Amino acid sequence: MQVTNKLSPFFENLNFERDDNTMVINFGPQHPSAHGQLRLVLELDGEEVVKALPDIGYLHRGIEKMAENMTYNEFLPTTDRLDYIASTANNYAYALSVERLIGLEVPRRAQVIRTMLLELNRIISHLFFIATHALDVGAMSVFLYAFREREFAMDLMEDYCGARLTHSAVRIGGVPLDLPDGWIENMITYTQKLPENVKMYEDLLTENRIWKMRLEDVGTISAENAMSWGCSGVMLRGSGIKYDIRKEEPYELYSELNFDIPVSNSCDSLGRYKLYMEEMRQSARIIEQLVLMYPKTEPKLMAHSPQYISASKEEMMTQNYALMQHFVLVTQGMRPPKGDVYVPTESPKGELGFYIKSEGEPYAYRLKCRAPSFYHTGLLQELLVGTYIADVVTIIGTTNIVFGEVDR
Image (cartoon, rainbow, N blue to C red; front, side, top):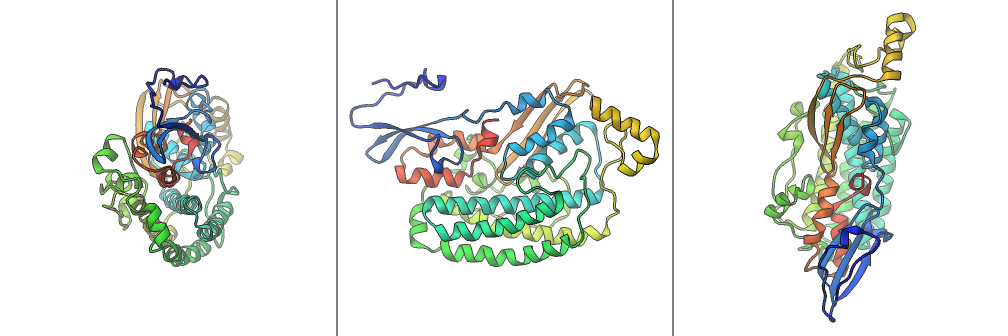
């Protein structure tokens, strides 16, 4: 029997044959555990998955094409809508790519603030993961506790930039704002309490027999498979490969910071869950080191490069030339030199990088986003085979995919 999907050309040329003992069902795209607009076509033999085909594109917004029709600064707030759980990671990855393209050096205080925001954003994203993943598996209490701590972290983001979800807290060349009064103290209070809260989640879950039955030896990915499918982040480190871009290709201040890269050799969902827990502790450790660096920096937030970066507000209000330069940059956009660049960063979900090709115009000739969730979604067609229908929810949750960056 040939099963085709007239709504999606993706399936038209697939040989999706089955015998009378199997059943084909649709998981999503409106399923609450699909973590976005994911449609999985599953062929089942009883409750065992025999074949899985992820169908994407339901959330497509043409973000990469939008980037090619917007000036470099105009596009930055749009990056918030990629991985909307970790907006600052997207802002930063894009800003860093443009900075490398034009050869810009960011002031040290801006680097300290940006690294703080990146790690705070990592905590926010990881808390969202454990909350929703636990809820998918059936642990209601952890969902409530983790969202409580996430709200406190989002309060800190709001105190800094005024936004809780889509931050736009980074600029090409630095940051727009210095840390407000009392922010450092509130941050220290939060990071000191976080390990205690993480331990509470672990006490509720790690040795819970239901949690272990649902995650242990489920969604097993060998190191070879993880590499061949282009996995990164926790999906790669959970298969025993110690690779983190913050260590391998350090950016900002990561080369000066002391932190560990947790790795799991269990290769299953339980091992990946443990990595997320440990990474939150490491992020708190990084932030505490940055807090000590902050007072030693000069209060300069944006790079000085009149050709590409607007002058400070004070200069624009007092110097006619600075105001003219600002007007040109806003109305016409910066013109980076001809060339191309690809810059990878370690987002909460894995390797997030931007490829930009410039022809010397105010608009990128080509922009390509390398998003980790896209590769982890493709892996599902192999990862789900041989598992049971009840495990599908667990495995999708442990991949931690977000469809804003899949359907870009």
